[in-house]
Length: 86
Image 1: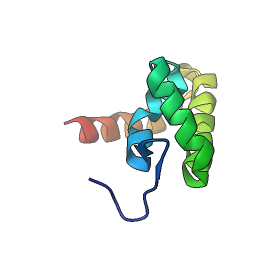
Image 2: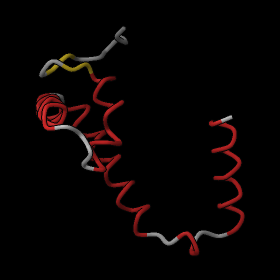
Image 3: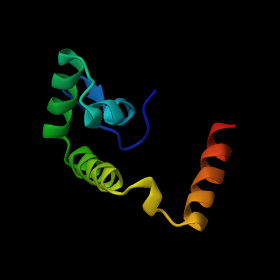
């Protein structure tokens, strides 16, 4: 099922690329999936912009030590995660 405004590029819909984005950033996609995602991103300006922004956020978060996160923010994040997961 596709959403309005999605594009199919290199055999993948935008939503399929978004579903693979965490694995793409982590470098854990298979060679076939990696080629498909990179082909899509190379031909879809929206996914290219969003994917770049997503990767930038992930890289930024990795630079922050958990000990550096103030308690009120850590508590809000934990509550939001619990809400989303439960």
